[in-house]
Length: 159
Image (cartoon, rainbow, N blue to C red; front, side, top):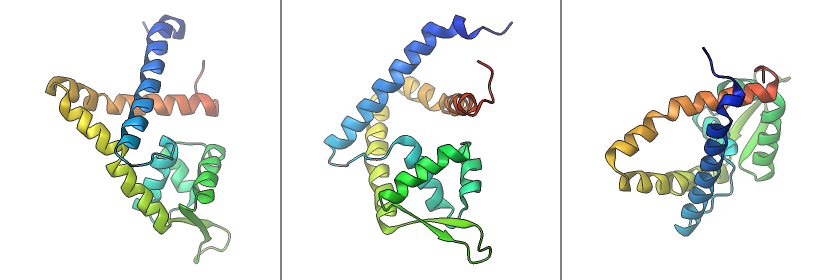
């Protein structure tokens, strides 16, 4: 029988606190390595997808990131304000837009790879191999949790 949300409240609180502490530690470690971490995780993921799929449309990006269009609009606004992404009219369809990373956006991705990701890689390598494997093995489940949380925001998941 599935557990009710109230049955999971203690674990959910612990997970929330752990993830918050983890993000704070990643940011601090990245900054201590001289690499600024000025992008929120969602912005970093969006910028990465735009770089990997140059010319992607906002609709396609929203689908790949499993985000609502309003959520993505806010992320893109921040990326555009930071001059990390350009939104241009499509040459094939004047009604739609395409997204492309700027030189600064590509540089920011380089910092992310060597900043937060580098700090996490260093920390993972310092753990017992079994712990590192468990953390890596949990990534698909954590991605599904992120999608479920997005569904709650979009009204797709019953609370």
